[in-house]
Length: 467
Image (cartoon, rainbow, N blue to C red):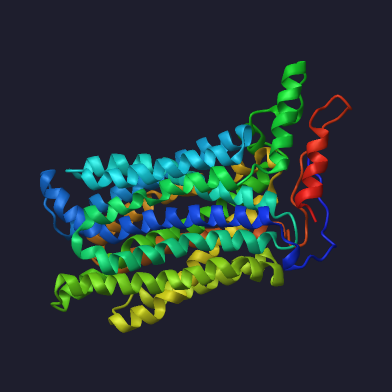
């Protein structure tokens, strides 16, 4: 790229050389992403009971097709909000810094997810899910940019992977909470989602703004004050959609879109598939809820491993091969599990494998994405690629619900398989993806001239966190 500087790390650092600041940033972003996953998973777990109660209040029959259609629509609204919020807050993070924007996003998704506990109709729930999605779109792109910019050493990919594992960890905790508290109703479960709001105190107190983005922001402000302009001052979205960044934006978007389509199709509907199977077997509702909770814990246990191990795998075999492994594992798991009738025990055995592959691919998009863009457009680049993916993905859960009724006589397993198969489009992006293993993060040009007040900050960046 003409306006970036890249190199290769040669120095080997030991874990004890990792700074306290790096650990605090990793802890704060991992907790934020975990609580985001906690809130999202709570909704997937209570989707069926919530729709069964709210649809009659909305004048709609609460049968399998109604729950599938309107439940899928509320998930679609959440993903649409996630996409819009991701781009909005991503741009703000590149202009005003990571930490304040991250805090605003956490409060938004926590408060509006919890407010959904007080809704009376499906459309009220859908509207609140959209607003909660606006805040949810912040955590992954801004958090991943923050971790990558602070962990500028040989452990960068592993740290990003550990941060991403927080999401699956949040899913696991949500399943555990559902096992013990699900009997108290879906409203209590959604009310628990206010918990992430308390994380903001930790983030604002202990998570610092990376010196690199401070340097970029200060340099931009200095040029504006002096009446000067540079290519880096063009609006970030315009820069990402033009050379030299366009090709990388397209690669990141294709990888994210395919991964997200497969993930959301499976994670939205497997609880309902298990619940339906329990009903066919004549099991009571509390037993069905327990089956769903245990299956969710296993799915997300595999997801935690897939998320956390992706950075280690990518460092060992390269980013491209790590993506190929995730795609192959998730494809094999989905093809085995969903098109065919299986007993509950087989679901429990296969879901961790499916989770490993699906979550691993998602982890890869946020480990790999920061390595494609410099700091001045990094958060927006991550947000744009994933938000486009989420806008496309927003139709996935809805389409699965519709085609289950229209094509497969209500069989959500076949419908989920068909929609998840669209996720294989990620392989197209993998063909054109550059290998970044061993390379430095791309950098913006250093401020020119002795009058630039940001030059000391640039050397501070190198001294504090660059190896």
